[in-house]
Length: 406
Picture 1 (tube, one colour):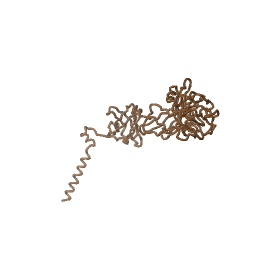
Picture 2 (picture 1 turned 90 degrees about the vertical axis):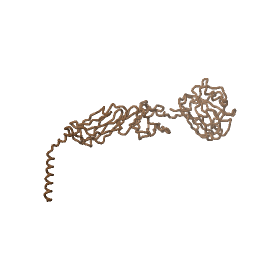
Picture 3 (picture 1 turned 30 degrees about the horizontal axis):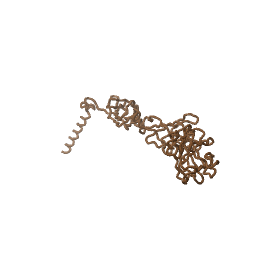
Picture 4 (picture 1 turned 30 degrees about the vertical axis):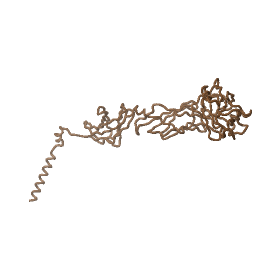
């Protein structure tokens, strides 16, 4: 009885299989309007490379051999671009550059198509940024090193220094003038913080402009809108003391004796000197006291002064340095102790180049910078306000040296 029922089940199963095999593969199209749904293979690893008013989409091609093209849509499918399929090797890269875009963040949809127009499932790329003038306006040139912008070496070559860039810096292009007058182009890589100029013409401008990319692998390099000027590089040159001559202007202090004259201040002595190899004033007045001299020519950029005191005493520790280019009608007839002397000097066109305050005994050479961007200067007045030892009448000094920035 069991054998009979088993045989009947087996025969029924075979009949069902035969009926199924006899159905045509396309018969199910009756449920799909007579058309078969076909989805070509999709792309893989889609990425975006941003640029200036453009971008590039890249992807690995579909391995489906039926794919003949790819279409990219954006702006809610109002815009599109088609790329023909030339490879199905997934190790290759398909590139699609879209130009003429506004600075904005876009979304893209990419479809694969076969020869019959069948379309793949969509591949979406969101947050695809395009850069332009707004981004460029945010860029700044790389900064010079604020603490130590440059160093002048003994051979007159110059090391210029920059701060670390704060974003994806590509390069900083520099332009400067050689000693011969020729314009030179140099570049500074982002991982470099200094550059040596071996033939720089001192006092001439060094212009520079930096370039950046917004992200790694960006299509385009962006440049700052304008050049910046590196801090002016000057060489300090000692003023020619052979041209210095004495003056005797209204209110100037007298001398102690004939061989302790003002000219002792530029006789080339080095270090604190002893009497009588010094300038030694008379003792006929109290502080403040003033002396004057002619540097022999106009200096357009006086930069530094060094004052050396006597080897023992009566050394200034507080004094003013005044300068002017022409003393014609420029000397106030006023005692240097008068409270209005300073204002009178300024009214006559003199410039206060430095108020020097020493905190030592005033003996050793003391070098200090004068004001930035001084006017042209030929004539100098030194107004001594105080001596380190408290002496209120006599003034002693060994040497004065000036440097001009060139």
